Amino acid sequence: MIRGIDHIVIAVRDLVAAAKDYAGLGFTVTPGGEHTGGATHNALISFADGAYFELIAFREPDRPQEHKWWGRFAKGEGTVDFALLSDDVAAEAERLAATGSGIAIDGPADGGRLRPDGERIAWRNLGLIAAGAPLPFVIEDVTARELRVPPGAATEHPLGVTGIAGVTLLVNDLERAATPFAALLDTPGEAAPFDIAGVLRARRFPCDAHWIDLAEVDPGAAELHKHIRERGAAPYEIVLAGADEGTEPLPLDLTHGARIRFQHP
Image (cartoon, rainbow, N blue to C red; front, top):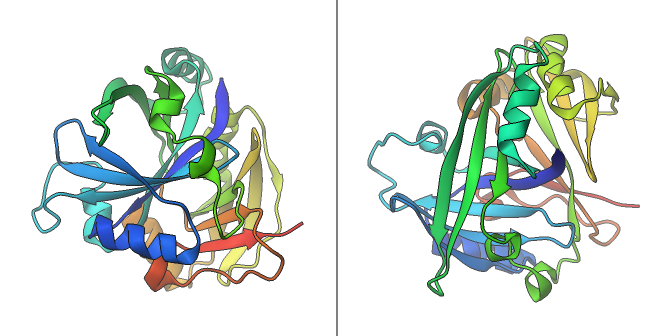
């Protein structure tokens, strides 16, 4: 069963510098550790709703490598992917295979990370692929979730944010992209408001406490189509909840390319 957005992956060139910039914006940043294989390391920004940002950096950022996010990072810093949380990725794979939605399954595959305190944590990933649909991957904890996602004081931020409200994904064809998402999230979604210049229409899919918007791009919106080509399943925009009324969208130079704005009551 899908439990909502687990985390959003933001690829940065210099992890120390990015962590400092996010802390300066009012986020509490927690060191994450090194991933199995040693190619990447990360820092985490966890929220009270259980979701988090993963700031991830390559140990050798100038060396082309066989990593699922290398091609996206090579185009520049910013969002490169996002994940949904599941209790059982194997069962999720079986369910999706039975839907006839055209979603191809990759995995489940094992993942892990060594924390700075020496604690080794483990999870399982499920890759999802469908033509024309920027699908996320799905993650299941093997070790206790609180070992992977910092709880308590780590979720308290001077900026006042309490969680992820939702994300917006860009697509060329809304109807084509909506079919796999409807199967994944077990809902047809509904028309959604939008204010991104160059977007023609949008559909919102509830995802537990969060939402995922698919936004169809005007054929003439060159910059938005560039995002689709270069970023794949990376969210175009992240919307956070809990900040004070009037909090402005965060500057791209300090978020290292991630578009972040706020939802107010």
